[in-house]
Length: 329
Ligand SMILES: Cc1cc2nc3c(=O)[nH]c(=O)nc-3n(C[C@H](O)[C@H](O)[C@H](O)COP(=O)(O)OP(=O)(O)OC[C@H]3O[C@@H](n4cnc5c(N)ncnc54)[C@H](O)[C@@H]3O)c2cc1C
Image (cartoon, rainbow, N blue to C red; front, side, top):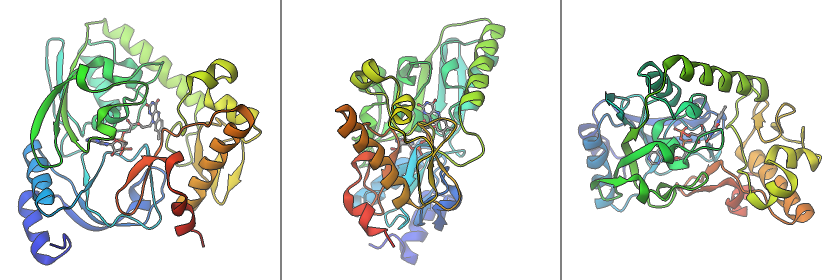
């Protein structure tokens, strides 16, 4: 069944009341301000709705894309022809019980960090400046100060691609440096339980303020961006330093393709300096990675994930060359 037919839209509306939107301009909603039109975006309000939607799609052989706040995503200018499930503000409840905190996956990470500080729970200060959802953070095992959220988790609730809800202990989440099982298993994270030690609120607040001040000083703030574009490679790091220093040493700070610009403020950030297209971003990301390969012997690998119009999602350095050709003028 065509998910855009009137019958399908009516059925989806019953499974996800008030959460169905057609024809969403991704360049208006994505953090990089890049992307074409998404045919269908669904914003469920509970795990039960996520399960009902995924079962409905599985029964019709349709594989939707899952997104959070898009702070780590590059959408194609061709948009999205498959349905997109966005876990966000409609799934943002939190409950605290001693050192255990259960939060829905759509909660905004800086807001979660603030709630933890107010409750006097430490250990997750490192997430306070990350502008995504908890679900996106867990999928990316995001963090700062050389930490990842995986080490703060007890368990993660997710929904499989055929609608089954299950809870996985954190040890089975495959958490490594910016890695988790959720990047490949097609499950949708719906909630998580964190376990955090108590810590004086003043100490937590002071640490968070220092982290935020440091980020304000170092990162570009005005132009649309997706945070660090490349992950740190241990071998490259040992010899040449972090990705920003490597990009600078390759002479690529300030390099521009179209309106995609390596930030003059921090070289591991690529900003949209106006009307950048996905093809510009991909070309610049791949040029940087290849220059690292030819001049330093190892490529830089992208943390940012590219979403093709058929929903295929992969690190932007692995985007197929066709993506560069398809959208070229
Ligand atoms: C200014 C800026 C600063 C940043 N700083 C940091 C930083 O310090 N550390 C860091 O790690 N990252 C950082 N990031 C990157 C980004 O914010 C994180 O990766 C964030 O956790 C992504 O969350 P999101 O909700 O935006 O996910 P999205 O970007 O929407 O999605 C990212 C990936 O997660 C998947 N995903 C999203 N939600 C779910 C879900 N519910 N279930 C399953 N999969 C899901 C998507 O399919 C996609 O593959 C920064 C970004 C910006 C713009």
